[in-house]
Amino acid sequence: MFTKTPPMGWNSWNTFADKISEDLILETADAMIERGLKDAGYEYIVIDDCWSLRERDENGDIVTDPVKFPHGMKYLADKIHEKGLKFGMYSCAGVKTCAGFPSSYHNEFRDAKLFASFGIDFLKYDFCNVPQGANGPLLYHTMSLALKESGRDILFSACNWGADHVETWIRSCGAGMYRSTGDIMDKYNSFRDIALSQKDKYAYAGIGCFNDTDMLIVGMKNKGNVALGGCTDTEYKTHFAVWCFCASPLMMGCDLRNVDETSLALMKNKGLLRINQDVECRTPFICGDNGKNGLCWFRHLSDNEYALMFVNYGDKNAEITLDLDKIGLWDGCGHGLKIKDVFTGKTETVSRTKTKRVDAHDCAVYVCKTVEL
Ligand code: GLA
Image (cartoon, rainbow, N blue to C red; front, side, top):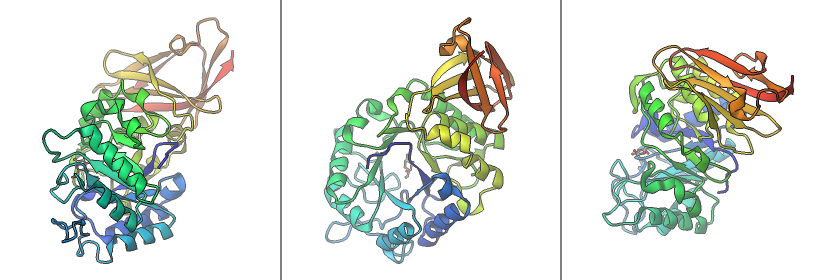
């Protein structure tokens, strides 16, 4: 499926892992609607690993676990479609999925047909248990061709964790998004390390294929499968802001049925989503660096607007400076920036430099326009 802006939705893995069921999926779809997340743009409900039995049937097809999903996947897909949402599932390029379930290696066309018969709109394709000597990139090419032949328009979400210089070839195989990093955990260091590791990779994201820096941990509050201490509200705010700023797909990972109001408001923040979903999909660049992991980022948006972010990945409060010279507004050019805080709505004009004091692990994000001084 051709995707013009970063896909948005929910995935079962971060919180539920193998504890998935038809009820959970339908309740999550309802929560997505009732909590205003569908209206905010989230649309995919994706079942990750652990949805099938351990063995294929006598025809060679993967069998949906009848205890977890008593009415089967077609029923679930239809229900999700009736709610106006899209349905995603998971397989893997190896002989077994990461959790040891049947996987699509040398079964790509058969499995793609089965997934299409269920009515899926999205396939996440993992990279565990690939036979030695197999060509990783070609395995993604094969499944992409199989999905295209399957008769449904399916978004191909590749997940090889950044291996094989994936950013250089993944677009050529037809994927709509691809994991550019290892797995995220629900703790500050995990998303900070992912974000810092991607600084030089953002130019590979663009219309049709987006760098997926992994599912969101916002709102997990140290509960569920990838919990590893949890994050503060400030840290979730920075995580979400950075994922938005850098055009990552936004796949929520918390329990939407019980998500707290602060996390919910964050994931619906209009200014941040406007940046994430900008139709021009331009690359953010660093325009300030305090040498202690305090960074200032700038990004061109559509409609002659811009996005500006100060982010302090350091463990102490710090000052980060934006110098307009660094975005091309040279001293004496007669122009500055009018900036609007996406969290408070407060506006101000920057005529030369702006030094922002940012608490440890916090950020500030603005939507801007140039102004004549
Ligand atoms: C890998 C992926 C995760 C998740 C699990 C499922 O670790 O990177 O996102 O899909 O497999 O087993």
